[in-house]
Image (tube, rainbow, N blue to C red; front, side, top):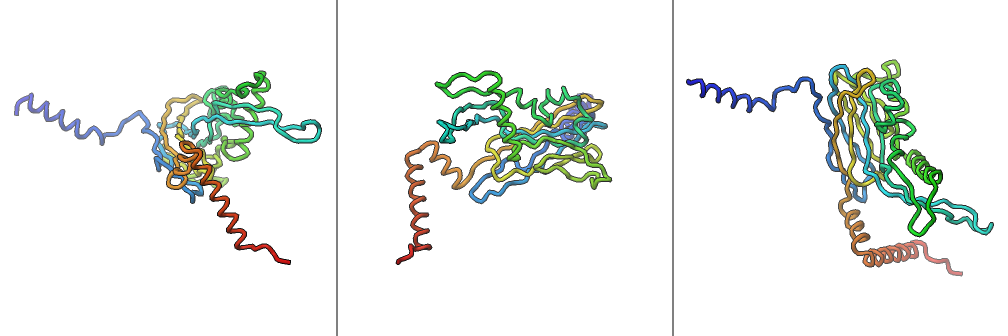
Amino acid sequence: MGKLHRACLVLLLALLLAPTLPCFGQAPGVTVSPQTVLVDVNFVGADVAISGVAPAGAQAIVKVTAAPVTVKLAKKGPVLGLFWMTTEQALVEGMPAYFAVFSSQSVDGLLSPDEQVRLALDSNCVGLMSNAHAQAPSGSAALTPAEARVYVESLRDMYIKTAKYVPCQSCHRSQAQGGAPGGMTGTASGGSLALDEGRWQLRLRLPTDAPLGQYQVTAYYVQAGTVVDTREANFDVQKTGLVAMLGSLATDSAPVYAVLSLGVVMLVGLGIGAVFPKARH
């Protein structure tokens, strides 16, 4: 066999074996399953499995965020000393609709406070709020910087109260506290994830009112207080079945949706009347 033939054979074998060869010195990407979470009328939440491999000697911090949405907030107060009504309103933009952090060790022990804020990993969500802003609705007086900040912080507090924001308050659970090497400890409430020879996994529990849209999963690999590698993945939460149909009607055919809603209300009223007939005297 000539040298040219041998060279071609070696090249062909290399191309065939390349997908199976390990990629030394580089962490594989993040794996998410399922890629699409479907929300129907019976949706009671869902589990999303997330896993990856950290470089040798590195710790892992995983952040999950949903796409930002515009939220309208209202401030209520007394009017004429008699009525409790909406007195001010604002639109808050740039805040992710969902946020959760998991880590193999305490985030405070892995990254400096400034680095946590820069990466939007801090427990007070200062990094998240730095990308948000509030503005008055069209036709209203402009908000002062102080007023705008109050609205942004109020939305942050509301998200935390409703478990849409679950920062990692203490992402380290030692074996003495019940942690098991290689175990999966991540939950929807945020928390620790255990490394087993560099491999990690967590289970993200989405709530029943999980925001729709695309979610981003970002894995930060940290050594000696420095992020040495970053990996990303995405998954979607989408409507399906009757939920998707009603959503399309509400958006594309508002009059039809209004008539359908009125019909449902009338049927419910008739049903209640049949089950609980009015007492006769």
